[in-house]
Length: 209
Image: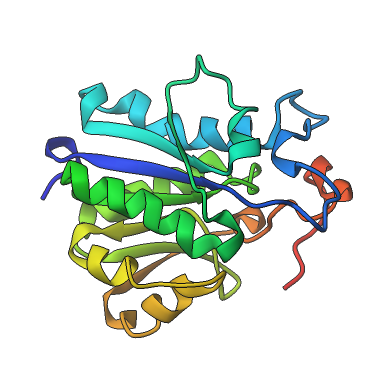
């Protein structure tokens, strides 16, 4: 299977409440770019869509909670899905995305976290390229032995993805599927570092490993 001849979704998981941040961290403005945290993540998710042969072959979905959804620019080239069960953990947002992926019969999904705005474009492209080489495998970047994002999840595992629960539900799926997991080693610390506190917005703080 070739990515050029298949259809995919990039899914931005953006339904978190940001309690430790003390407010809607996804709407916080990054001082270096003047963009919000979520806008910059969406930019990264749109990279491959803009290079796709057809807009229909690659779409970007943002799975959000009702409050965060209001902050997303309606002019962006994304579709917004509201997760009404966002308080039940990240897994519910993953399932909203996978459910839509199943409905559209796509070949796989690329999962981005809405609070990881500093992932390098090189990391994103490396995951895409590895997925092109092994489209039936799960692809994930890794920085100093720490798993990161974006994560590629092929359609053959969608049923397992729909069974996850809680905030760490993805781990319960990825563990048993370790034989199908392929790593992309990277020197990019920001593929494992999310925005947790206002002090993280500068993008200068080293990740805690």
